[in-house]
Length: 138
Image (cartoon, rainbow, N blue to C red; front, side, top):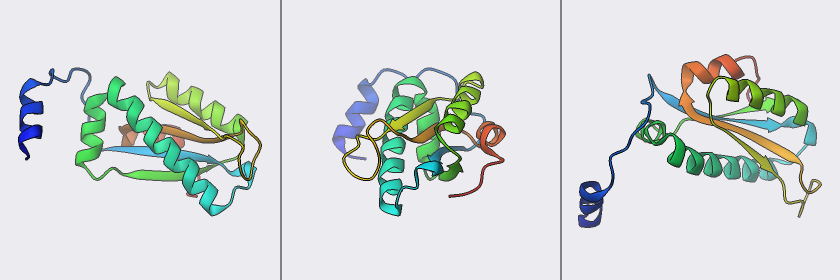
């Protein structure tokens, strides 16, 4: 640990909030109806993962710590279309899971504002499985 990290740990406010009960992962559900290319999908999932991590860092920091400590597991799944992603988002919100929607800027393959990815978590594996367990891997 560097000197800066050492002082940060000494002076940072204590982390509060609910602790995760088990291993954590992040799930990215890709809007398969848009027929995005592989590179476009990779970029959109990357946006979702970063946005979800930043959001969770302020709202559920203990979940981010657990997720980071256990390898930052990420799973990419197929969603049928934007309506499917929005329905999954509502189920996740109802279950207390953090959600992040990614909308494309429209500079390349797809129209501006298109819903490309729903990122869920980081959250416990069990809770995410209840919402996304029936979806196919990308």
